[in-house]
Image 1 (cartoon, helix red, strand yellow):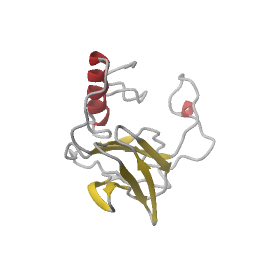
Image 2 (tube, one colour):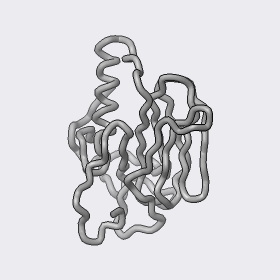
Image 3 (cartoon, helix red, strand yellow):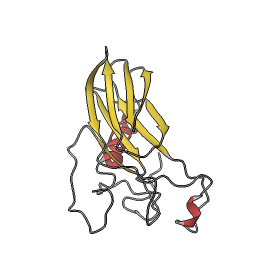
Image 4 (cartoon, helix red, strand yellow):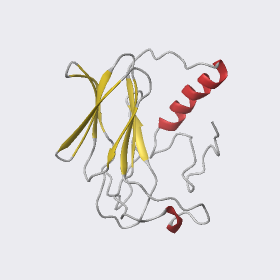
Length: 173
């Protein structure tokens, strides 16, 4: 594991809690740090989900260099991601717009990723067709935007969302 910086938001390399990512990277870093120190993964004692998404669909073929000079060019991927902490096998589900994507996963920390679509994603961990953990994203994915922002936003079922008062003209509130 290589943590580049605690709070370099401009380069989207920070792991500290923030309005956009909440505690996602902070909490996951704690888990992987415990794994590193012990030499074995910590036991998963309850189901949880972590999600991340961009709040806008960035046109295909774009690279991050337009926003993040002089960093290395990387293709921008419009994806919705869900990392689950599973005690036993489960079905992961992500719903956005009128579509629902599902994938069966074993216990552990499976990652489920789908193409981003406009809307507010909904995330679920299902067993026997029943949601044992579910939540709706705090963020809306927009097709159009006024200022390009390739940063990821997120949240988790382990902590309540901490809302910051909206700024004038903020399309996500």
